[in-house]
Image (cartoon, one colour):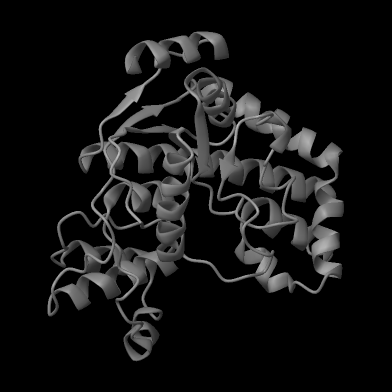
Amino acid sequence: MEVATPYILLVILGPTASGKTQLAVEVAKRINGAVISADSRQIYRDMDIGTGKDLDVYQEVPYHLVNIRAAGDDYHVAQYQQDFRRALDAVLQAGRRPILCGGTGLYLHAALSGFAYSMVPVAMARRATLEQLDRESLVRLLENLPRPAGFTADISTKKRIIRAIEIAEWCQHHPSPRDIQRPPAARIFGIAPPVEIRRQRITERLVQRLNAGLVDEVQRLLDGGISPQRLIRYGLEYKYTTQYLLGTLDYETYFARLNTEIHRYAKRQMTYFRKMEKDGFPIHWLSNGSMDDMTEELLSLIN
């Protein structure tokens, strides 16, 4: 059910280890808010350390779209889009101000765009052909295809490029699907620490996660019946920790490779956010400072 009460969705985004969750919680405390997660892996239960849930940070602040699926379940962006709408309605019905917070660009875009493409069918024969192409060829093909208004392609992985091509080709012969409510009115705020600080935080946080039992967490997931192939698909911490536990990597190589890939992921996140700006989602980048300073700056801009 769409809530008629006027509201502005606050959005706080940033790369991994930027402090966005803490900022969202601090703001929520001051404005009677509730946080809606835009993280593609925090939806899964029993995947806590590797996804950095840090649930104790929320304290009394309500949060949504965390721990809503069993680890190993299939979940895709169209489902997130529907779950986001339900969470948004629940926050508004509770009389709180919604704060969307996360770093998964595709999920942020899905929440903000108001367009759903879940009805676009999978073309298995076409996919089999596309999977034979390399990433660069797929990107060129996508760039030459007309795309429906409001559709932003995620080209972070070969799988997502193929899905984008699938949608673009389908929309050439069908009306653009609009199977959910209109886009929410939103104000978007971003955190972008200097690269050297971001890199330091990422490495420090990886060490903290390892000390907190990341390897044991992944071993429990394997022991619980989740296949190595499934865990590897979750990427980064789960991919490389699984490879380490299977004996594919020694510990030094495991740490070095995982650390490097998280840095690269943060860079890709920033690239996606800049693309969102070009695609019509203005982002106010907060001044780099203490958590208190960023909180006060954000509050001054919305009050």
